[in-house]
Image (cartoon, rainbow, N blue to C red):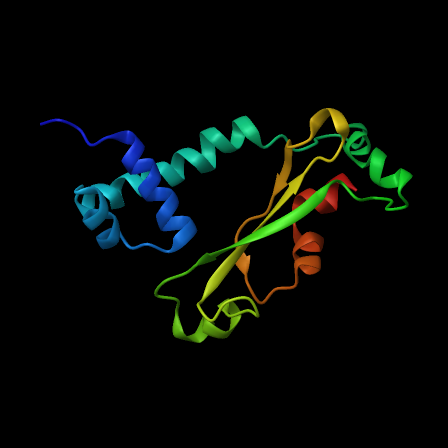
Length: 156
């Protein structure tokens, strides 16, 4: 039996994550069964959170490496800042009822989780990811996320 086109499976995984499509939506738009999309999605997430994460997220491991990322921010008066940060909200379906309020934020009426990413802002390393948080409740203030994450406790 011929395999499903990898391009459509990757596109499906990204649409599931980024646009909130269901596996049923993906089946209708690609003619690939929802079960194939579901199985691929879990493999894709596993691959992304291990292989791709290890390849592209290069967190400083020493104080010297951290200082290199903070240099330009220190010149601007932001001492201890490791890079610029942003977060993305991922819709969480079937959230436990007792946790629903924790997953509701000001940006969406849907239950979501937030992932924060820190990017190097040095001129030579623009776009280098230097840290990424685990998923947090969307109601958690991003400043508190940074305090709680190991990367931020150990690198500043």
